Image: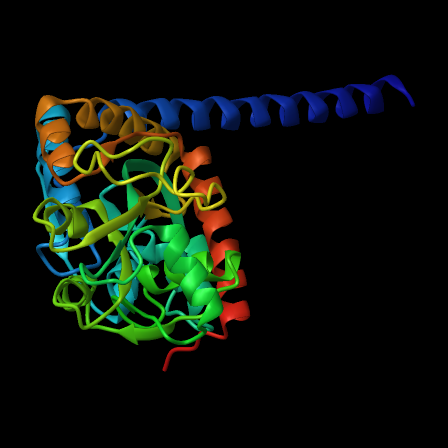
Length: 333
């Protein structure tokens, strides 16, 4: 190579290095700038359920704290329907600019596992942080002939199809939660779907349905008033609102780990600095006295996580529910 060619080669290499460095510095500057200036306008939070659910309460309670912390209004919009998929689709198709978020629950993983076709791909939604988690509570009618969970399962094993259970609907989280427990213990119960878990609990309390699984919020008042028999609660320790209800481990079923969760998500591609800032602000919000009070009253525990931890949880649940759906032969129209 002569000197002229060597010079030309060196210059081109130098130019490429400088160009790549400039792009890298530009990207880093843009990321820092995005984090420093965001948000500059109101933030929309979509709840894929009708008003009144705890998911809605969580979004509004945390949203009020984020409004104070971020200096921009957090507007909550309810877009319920089709098992939470309508509202989720709205977020999946929104611009990933840091101004649209989703607050949802286990139904996100359930829908991903249950429906062969969705209007969106689960990968189009990125996980930001958990907001809360709460135990699953297995309850029975007050006149149930068995008084403990071990007795109830032993009776079901000896008498397949003699007992029934209620749920919030075919393919609902309460349905899958019960099917998972029954499969773990080789028990067969007749499924009775309702239009919502609240309706199912009314019929269990009235003695028309034998057992059901619900959240602490949907069961604790009934248990306190002796209108439902508390058989077991998930988690590592007893729930403070139901101190007389044993954990699944105490009841003899340590393998059952089902928990209800509630979290914030965003369109995939939302800038990483914005995701990191929102995680930080959520951690501050859920530690506030107001959020702690509202969440604890509803029987759930305020929590915050990294995106990676939340993503791993969602992916593991999708696989879990897929297995349950296949084994229990659950279908939806």
